[in-house]
Image: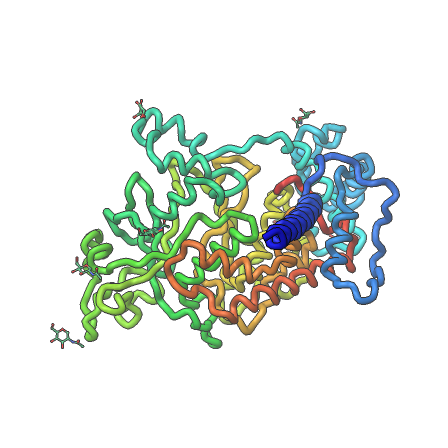
Length: 535
Ligand SMILES: *[C@@H]1O[C@H](CO)[C@@H](O)[C@H](O)[C@H]1NC(C)=O
Ligand SMILES: *[C@@H]1O[C@H](CO)[C@@H](O)[C@H](O)[C@H]1NC(C)=O
Ligand SMILES: *[C@@H]1O[C@H](CO)[C@@H](O)[C@H](O)[C@H]1NC(C)=O
Ligand SMILES: *[C@@H]1O[C@H](CO)[C@@H](O)[C@H](O)[C@H]1NC(C)=O
Ligand SMILES: *[C@@H]1O[C@H](CO)[C@@H](O)[C@H](O)[C@H]1NC(C)=O
Ligand SMILES: *[C@@H]1O[C@H](CO)[C@@H](O)[C@H](O)[C@H]1NC(C)=O
Ligand SMILES: CC(=O)N[C@H]1CO[C@H](CO)[C@@H](O)[C@@H]1O
């Protein structure tokens, strides 16, 4: 008996010791990782005396290069650029390079030159068409310094910006015209759509929205007129609107080798996968989206507008089908059909308010493809394209430049070649993130990593500090593992991404790091990695 008690006591003691040990270890690991990702005060000066890395710094043997990159980025983070130095450079740059070739002498530049730099947003008084060909290596380096300077300045100017939500934007007009809408769950949701992200993944509103999108009864289905392929607008309870992209091709569909990106069919599972990847990457810039099972007859045909209803028919296999109206794949041979019978799956995405309630800015992507079978876009043949068309363009002298690099990284991971425009909510002003809309043509090939998608990062060699830090963290934890886990959390549609695509995502992340590494070799870490204060 006594022996038994003793044994019991000692095993409890051993158990306690082990538990304590593990908790301590976990705590230590947690503290360490928290510390690594912690963002110290924004404008603490970087440690003095840290040497800028040399262009071709030799690698330490046997160390993982990606870990090395992480170390370099951390050590070379610029907390506060030396503005005096940059200002001097900038003035010289203007005098020697830009003014000589200025054709329009009446730009705001003339007045801005008299030391008024801190008030006016800086403008480059340059005629893009006439001077673009004259950039030499020296000018390029100075233009890079200039961009670094403007973004540092932008960070200082916007460091105190408070977050604005769509609810803030719409409150006044709603209070006047539809006061009852202020009491809806839709309005609560709009409070989580801010200038930096279109949803809050940790909010109750997000969970409830997904339930709405997946289970909410549909009161009307109409066609979205814009776009080349069929999409439906669904009216859901509480004034929610959603965009439905129906099932078209199975999960293992690979973009046909002879099809151009612009005739590639849109895939609902690609939309779902892209949403999850964007969420895992911590961007939260794809409007919430979820897979849904629909009854073609009761959910769509019975609720369809007259125009849409007129395209319904019963197929020889007795499935209910519809064609819709659009410029691609809207004929009887590409109809959307229940399979079997009435069962249809699709992706359902929150439709954010559009004009006149909320204004959007549609920006033609400077790295847009030619959308032609015979022509090439200029960026495909001109490696100076970023200097000549992007860095010199004052539209990019704000967060947009790095938002575009974020989007580029995202598109490379998903293999999306179809990014012809960038969209952002301009009602928020200039400090507004891109909204990562329209990912139906991503995840088209898992066997190809299309390096041309990386052209913006390759040619501009700029990257956002906070994005790099998140990517490194995900790399360590296993990006595909996290993506897989996310896809299995709340999705009712099975196996959205086949194994090959998950493997491809991890592979592409390494290629992205290699590209950033190349930029570090060409320039310096401090000239590539920018902390613009955006998380
Ligand atoms: C730039 O120069 C070209 C050719 O000289 C001219 O046609 C164009 O109007 C100029 N653009 C501006 C904005 O001055
Ligand atoms: C931001 O806030 C800090 C501290 O309150 C202040 O010193 C600084 O001038 C503000 N910056 C701007 C651009 O308003
Ligand atoms: C919103 O709800 C609150 C309490 O539920 C009510 O007092 C208020 O009148 C409602 N406002 C509108 C505009 O319906
Ligand atoms: C939709 O309804 C089903 C059944 O009630 C539930 O299990 C599921 O969680 C709901 N979807 C979401 C996203 O909440
Ligand atoms: C789909 O809707 C039709 C018409 O309301 C109904 O007859 C059918 O049973 C439904 N199918 C399923 C699987 O619920
Ligand atoms: C479709 O339904 C009709 C009438 O209900 C039936 O005669 C026909 O055999 C069905 N066709 C198939 C392929 O099941
Ligand atoms: C400083 C500079 O790049 N100046 C250029 C302006 O444009 C002329 C031709 O248009 C070039 O010859 C100059 O070198």
